[in-house]
Length: 73
Image (cartoon, rainbow, N blue to C red):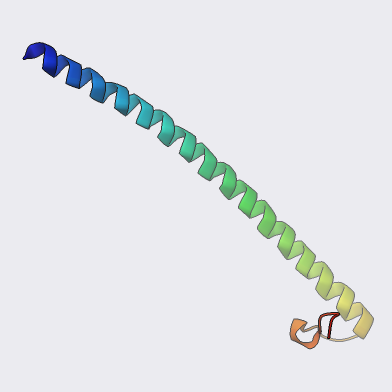
């Protein structure tokens, strides 16, 4: 009985150790993806600003994406 209990405890400790490792790996992945997402959002904002500036400079007025038609129309 004692040996069975010890084996179960050892098995649970091993599972817990693997879960801790997995949790750390997932946490690192989420943190890295958050940084990447923030970078992409910043790049998108800059591109949008550049597009507005370039279009406003060409047309001399305010720019609205809804006024632009895709090239296939």
